[in-house]
Image 1 (tube, rainbow, N blue to C red):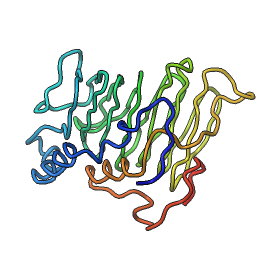
Image 2 (tube, rainbow, N blue to C red):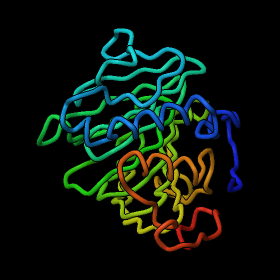
Image 3 (spheres, rainbow, N blue to C red):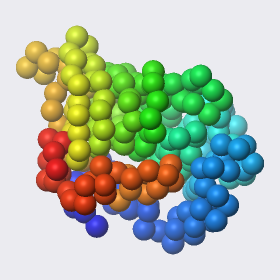
Length: 237
């Protein structure tokens, strides 16, 4: 497995793809037709649920379907992995987010992360964003990791693991074009006059993105290229 650096997260949170129960769930998901059956509205889009999760304030059951417009909350030591349209999501423990509706029932126009962390892979599409209290990311088709650090006053972390993302924090703007993990902080207060500052790659792994990409019938940039770069947050193979 690729080396990963943790900051306020446990190793178990970023190695979920190694667990036998997830591998069994992923195999069952594939056997049932994966994302194609979800888009045909013939089955639940929850790939795995461990621990407690709420949807719109009610307990989420594994056989239920998460829809655009829903608010999702996970409890301590919980994991939620689901596919919605051409995108896949891993919601970490103690997280709260909403997935707002786009042009169709299964198209997410906005992922609003209010607390915690989420790994997500997005297929091609237009007019889609991820927002936190301190940054906004315009998604064009990419794999990303987003986290809010409550112990740092709500400072937000965002890694464009691959793809193109329009970044904004305060008055700062940047276009992130990444092949291998380009990371940013969305600052709570200016840091050397900047609200959008460079960051290292932390709290997520290549393998997480690869599994989520597979669930959405995709491949990561480094899988396509057949090589990896240095995971230093610079974004280059």
